[in-house]
Image 1 (cartoon, helix red, strand yellow):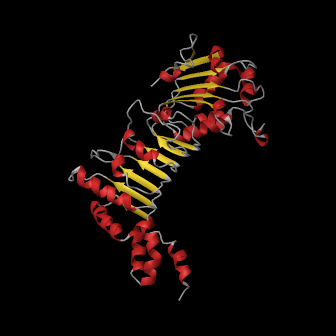
Image 2 (cartoon, one colour; image 1 turned 45 degrees about the vertical axis):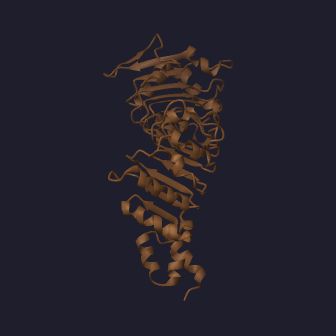
Length: 355
């Protein structure tokens, strides 16, 4: 016989719940040691009857309910009226005092008030992933969950709502439609933003953020997160130097061009290089090769591009919003002909209206 304290460590490596169930039937000792792992993660999305059997189980055995840390619900039964399901939903959530991650999959049912369904809950979530309820109905619930660090919201929202500083104050990871971001009235300690595919146009003034990466790396990060972006404007920051071991090994703008090629459908690219950093890769190349060559390089790197604009003169006094005054703009026709635009159809305030 192994010491009892070793069984929990061994059972932690069992990933299949069906195997854990079989183990729990071997003996009382195995049952006791495997139960925390069996109930740690509960997925009620596979069969509707699982929800109906799970509720009385945890209501009659509070110790089992305390083991549940991660719960996924699927609220899609067309044959049930909302009321019985609301009662079932409320009973389950009110019993899970140690719940830390809650995921709610899409639903065709119209629930009256999400706050009512969760009003008796004692848990403090670390992550909330919502694909079933609108934004305003969840506000009271979010206000009661200041510990949430990871938030997903995929349901369209009503205009006119805002996120005050007391709502989701500790948010570090967010996955939402891009239109949700302007609702935040104060900063959050966000480290990762995952945009859904609704994002089409994105403007990033890097002087307003502390990213700790160079311009090319910043473009790669955006391309990885939003590969289907169509219109992108980047206002770069000073002191964006090449790494010392890479200087001289390739063209200074290669990193920028490779990063740009990672987009799948990019049509518009507006770029303001570092304004005061005369030693940045951009200003190492531009004076010698000129704007025509740079434009052709952009269009060659990303075949879907139809319009590019970039600044052509560094300045020690220029304001970051004035870079268009010295910008060059080029367009490419569907036939592949590249033309310099004299009237600057792409401007700082107008490019973002593109859809």
